[in-house]
Image (cartoon, rainbow, N blue to C red):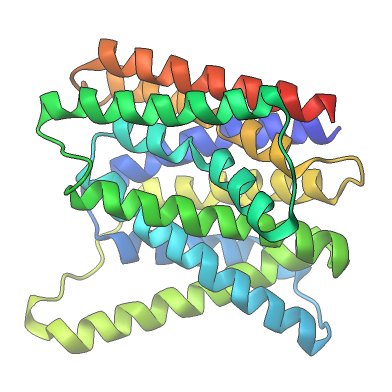
Length: 286
């Protein structure tokens, strides 16, 4: 069951990224995230319940990680073509694996090492392809924001397994309260931005796409948390399946946003997906 939940989460996550790229045309990064997360919090209000302080403190830390990943990721998505941003984002499972090696002393088999090398090869190829669009990976701000998003998102993924598996917090408790804390953090960031800019501060413009974003991330995250709660679920596998969302965002970049250099970047994406497939196969052997 957790495999199907992971797959559903991946599909919804792909459409979620497409909706964010569309919404960024009308509103700033913080407004979009605040609007979508506030709606998500309202959807999840029925599942809010009291819990021990240590659980709330744990979820506050998760909220910081998620907020960092979301804000930096959306800034990167704003500055980069969605085909480039989504391919960088899809490399996240490799960093989850890297953190697992560093933090938990996990060892990789040959198949997994092959997958890691292919993913890094894909990122190198993507950096070469992106030069045709004037994007230099070493100095581009959008790339830097996406890297920050990937690293903080990887840390959040590892932390999810801890709070669901070791702290035994229920998925809907995690999702509902984390959304509340993320909403508070985003509101504070907007307040700070307003205090710093005031006259230059851009207000919110209503956009139905934000409702779509809120619905998609709510259902996608619910599937994700319930998948992880399953005792048989493997974080590395769930994380890799969710990165399959890149296929949807890539197609949208080509057809909906009419982005360029699609053929070269399609090759880069194929190499990356092959690397993820090797990681998935190697994980199944363990």
